[in-house]
Image (cartoon, rainbow, N blue to C red):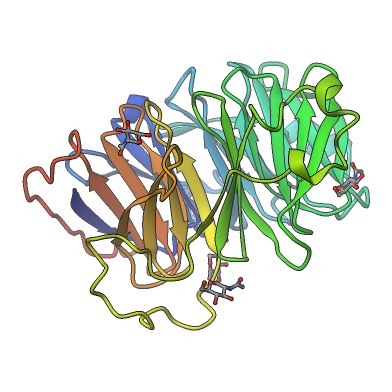
Length: 367
Ligand SMILES: *[C@@H]1O[C@H](CO)[C@@H](O)[C@H](O)[C@H]1NC(C)=O
Ligand SMILES: *[C@@H]1O[C@H](CO)[C@@H](O)[C@H](O)[C@H]1NC(C)=O
Ligand SMILES: *[C@@H]1O[C@H](CO)[C@@H](O)[C@H](O)[C@H]1NC(C)=O
Ligand SMILES: CC(=O)N[C@H]1CO[C@H](CO)[C@@H](O)[C@@H]1O
C-alpha cells in the first residue's frame, strides 16, 4: 500500500467522483476536486466574494454525496444559515443547480440535511437534524423536479448518517441518541430499530455491497456489524421477535480504539493514542469483497474481513489527528481519507501488493 498526502483545510468529507478518476473533498464551505493519479487540485469550488459573488455555500458544508449513476454529479449540503443543497459537476468544475432554492424561498421552515445518499439515479435520500419538527426526518427527493417528494419521521434524535442498501429498497439511519433505524423505501415504514448503547452517538452507518451486512460505528470506539441472515430486513419475519435479543445481536464488535492484535503491529506499544481521541468516525465497504474499512479518532485506518473470527487484517496510521471520512474508489484500488490534520491521504492498493513507492505531497493552498 502506498500513501499520497494532500494538504488542505480540515477535511469533513471525501468521495470518489468521475468513475474514480477524481476525488472531491470538502473543508469549511469549499469543495475541491483532485486528480486521483497525480494528486493535483483540478478545481476549487464555492469561493464566495469577488466576481463569483453568491456561488457556493455561505456556511460550512456538512454533508456530501456523489451520484453513483452519474459520477460527475456531487451534492453538498450547507450548515444552518446557508441551508442550500447544491449540485456540482466535478468534471466541468462548476455549479450545476441550487436544488432546494424553491423550497427555501417558499418555506421558511425546512429541515437541515445532515446526511444523504442517492437511492436511484434521480432520488436522493436525505436525513435531517431535529430542530424544526422536533424529530429527525428522512426525505426522498426527486432532484429532477426539485420538489420534496416524500418524507417520514425517522427518530426523535438528529440523524448523523444515512445510507441506502445496494438493492435500493432499504434506508439505514444512525442518530445522535445511539439508535439505528432501518426503513423500507417503498412503504416509508420502519423495519427495525437497534441501538449502539445509550450515551453514544452513531457516527456512521453502512451496508456491505453484497447486501449481507450492515454496520454502525459510534463514539464508543467500535463498529457493530450485523448479518441480515441472522437479522432479516423483512418486516414480517422480525415482527414477533424484535424484542428478542438473539435477533439483534451483532455478528462482530470491531474495536478500533485500542491497538489491533495484528502481526504487523504486535510489537508496537500501546499508549500512543491521545486520550479523548476515541470513536470510529466513518466506515465503508470495499465493493468486491466483504472487507470493511473503518477510520478512527486516533488517526488510524483499519481493514476488517468480517468473514473471519479474528477480522482485523490491516491497521494503518495515515493521520496525526482524527480521521473524519473515508471513501473507496469504484475499483477498490484506492482508499482516501480526510482528517482534522488538514490532510487528504490516498492509499493505493494494487491487488494487495505494496506496489511502487510513489508518495507526493502538496503545500497548503493560499485561498
Ligand atoms: C475504547 O477502547 C478502550 C480499549 O478497549 C477501552 O478501554 C475504552 O473504554 C473504550 N472507550 C469507550 C468510550 O468505550
Ligand atoms: C472524529 O473523532 C474526533 C475524535 O474522537 C472528534 O473530535 C470529531 O468530531 C470526529 N469527527 C467527525 C466528523 O465525526
Ligand atoms: C477474507 O476471508 C476469507 C475467508 O473467510 C478469505 O477467503 C478471503 O480471501 C479473505 N479476504 C481478504 C482480503 O483477506
Ligand atoms: C419516531 C421513532 O421512530 N422513534 C423510534 C426511535 O428509536 C427508538 C429506539 O429504538 C424507538 O423505540 C422509537 O420508536
